[in-house]
Structures are given as C-alpha cells and as structure tokens.
Amino acid sequence: MWHVIIIGLAYIQPMTLLDTFGMVSRDSLQHVPTSYLVALMAVLLTSLSYGAMIRRYPSSGSAYTYAQKAIHPGVGFMVGWSSLLDYLLSPMVNILLANIYLTAMFPSINSWVWVFSLTALMVGVNLRGVRFVANFNSTIVFVQLLVIGVFTYLVYSKLSAGQNALGDIATQGASGLWSFTPFWSEGTEIGALITGATILCFSFTGFDSLSSLAEETKDTKRTLPRAIFLTALISGLVFIFSTYFLQLYFVGDPAQYFEAIDETQPEILLLVGGSLFQSVVLTFAIVTVMASGIAAHAGVSRLLFVMGRDGVLPKSFFGRISPRSITPANNILLVGAVALLAGFLSLEYVVALISFGALTAFSFVNLSVIFSYAVQEGCYKSPRDLWNYVIVPVLGFICIGALWLEVEDTSLYSGLAWGALGLIYLAWRTRAFTQAVPQHHEDLDDES
Image (cartoon, rainbow, N blue to C red; front, side, top):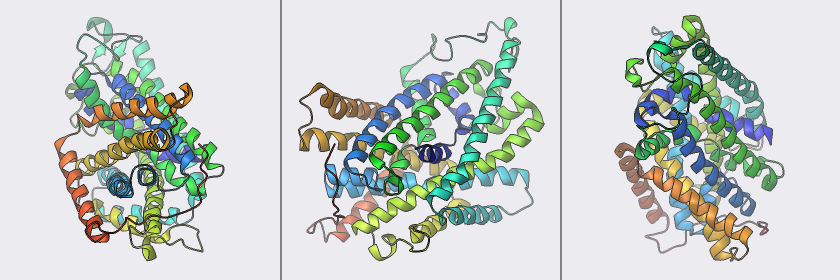
C-alpha cells in the first residue's frame, strides 16, 4: 500500500503549495488554508467513491471504466476522453515547471535541451515498470516532506520571534503565531473560498490516478481504496498545516510581496530562508517535478492501454503490453512525444485544460457509484448502504459541482472543444452511433 501512496504523493508533489500560494491567497482573500480545506472535503468524498468503484471494477481504466460499466459505454468513452486532458497533459506540466527552473538557472542553454532531456528521463524510468517508479520516487517524496518541514519551521520561528514578512507584528496590529484569521475573518467570502479551492483542485490531481494501477497492485480491492484515501488525506493535511503559517507570515494582499503572483515559490523561498536556501530548494524542486511527471506518465499510459484493450482506440497500438518490460511501452513512448509539446504551450493554458479533465472525472466517479450500487443493485435499503452508495457520492458530486461553478472560461471552452472532438471521433467509430461502443469483457468479481 505504501508503494502506491508514494506514487500518489509524488504525482501530487506537495511542494506545489509554494507555487500556488500567491494566486490562491489573492483569490481566496487571504484564506488559503480554508480553500485547501474546501478542496480536501470534495477530494476525500470523491476518494471514497473511487474506492467503492475499485472494489466493483478492479480495472486500470479508472473513471473511464467506471462510467462505462455503471452508466453507459458512450458516457464512459466521453469521460475517458475528457480525463485524458488531466492524465495526458500532467506529465507536460512537470516538464514545463522543470524547464522554467532550469532556464532561470542556466539562461544560456536552449530550453529545448531541457525539454528533450527531461522527457527522455520520464520515458526511460517508466519503461522499467511501476515498481521501479515507486522505488525511484520514495526518496524524493521523503525529501520533499523534509523540505516542507524545515521551511514551515523557519516560518514558525520567525512568527514566534514576533516577525512576519512586513516586520514587527506588534506594530502592525496583525495576528500573532496562533490565530483563526487564516481560516476565517470578517472579510471571508464563500465564493472566494470556492474560487481558491478550484485552483487547488489541481494540487490534488494525482490521488485519482492511483486507480489506473489496479491491475498491477497486489490485493487491489483492499489496498487501492485505502491508498487513494490516505494519499488525499496526507497531502491535504500537509497543505493546510503549512499554509496556515504561511498565511500568518504573508498577511494582506500578496501583491505587496511577490512580483509574479502566479509563480511564487522562488520569491517565498528567498524571503523566508535567504538566497542559499532558495538555491538549494529550487535545485531540488527540479527533481520533485520530475518525480511527479514520472508518476503521471505511469498513470496515463495505463489509461490509454485500457481504452486500447477495449477497442475504442486502435487496439494493435494502444492495447499492447511489451513482453519484455510488462508495460504498455507504446503508450509510454506516445505520452513522451506529447510531452515534447511543452516547448510550444504555456503553463497557464495546460493547467486550465487539466482542471477540466480532473473535474469531469471526479463528477462521474461519484455518479458511477450511485448508478452501479444504488440503481443497478438496489444497495440503498440498509443505513450503511444508503450512506456509502447514495449519501457520500451525492455529497461528493455536490462539492465538485460547486467547484465547477468557478471554473475559468479558458478551461471551460477549451475542455468543451476537446469534448466535441471526442464526440466526433465516437460518431465515426460507431458509424454515426448505429453500432455499440466497444468494451472489454472480463470476468469481474461482483462482490461489493
């Protein structure tokens, strides 16, 4: 189970809390921990739905398979197609981040050198197999958590000494070391908190990708549901704890501290720990984003494999497992080729597309639990079943629905355009919907 959790934490990349702090502080009106709490609530409820569906369908197809089996094969394809925006582009985000850091450190070197080199590394590690991916990421995740711990202690020490980013706390009338202000104050607005949570939903993308490892995990029905829930919970607690102190240290409008509010990690490290601390941590940050990219690469290659095995994508290419590495090697190479587009696309645009794909997957996993257990099997008569298969997924769907209300236009329109392209492909594949959508039929354990 801990191997799987390590992959999830590497995918989530806990140090992203430093990258997103400025924009979320701005949008949440300086209540970053509460926005994390809102996002965590939606994610934990959805993680329970993922666990329920994994026990019903222990397949690597994740939300694609769940919607296909529980609702309709056509709906399943569209969910899988939309989810590709999350899975397929996540490795690219990490290439973009690493490229930004390396280009800043070595401006004389052409950025394409970093794009090609980092992509080759991701492909090479994934071709070695999922256990190698887990072992590769274990040390990196440990050091990430250690860096966050050291950083949080530095902030705590400054606050204990009566200092924040503006200087002496006593002369400002600002909150001291212990205060409820980062969570709630007179200026709190529910809409602002949800807006911040929508951005932070991107920070949690990764816990759901663990479901794509269902066919490579021992004792899947027991291990994966626990691992998914614990991955979301551990990362959420780290985010909330660290940003509580950060919000106390950087009080008020973040624009007074940061020149680039959308890329605050370098400036935060400099202001809190000094130039040496900044240099060391940024160097390590390059390694962490690669760990996240490698884990994301592993997840998407397996989703493509399941869609190829089903026949909705060309089976001869996408549905093939390499007999040598026991991995979907063709898909790993293809995802690597897509990651090379990092040299052409902006980070903001890619993140916007990922948020659309993630929210689509989260929404339909919650719906799939209701359709599979309550509608198809009638599991709603006992209080336990009613809670597990109706109330929890409904609450999860409502929480994700609230995040949908704050999705920015770029994400929404681009995602809808991608969905329209998928619908056109599905119409062609099914001869104008006169043929059934292909499915992979296997003997699944019907025990819930």
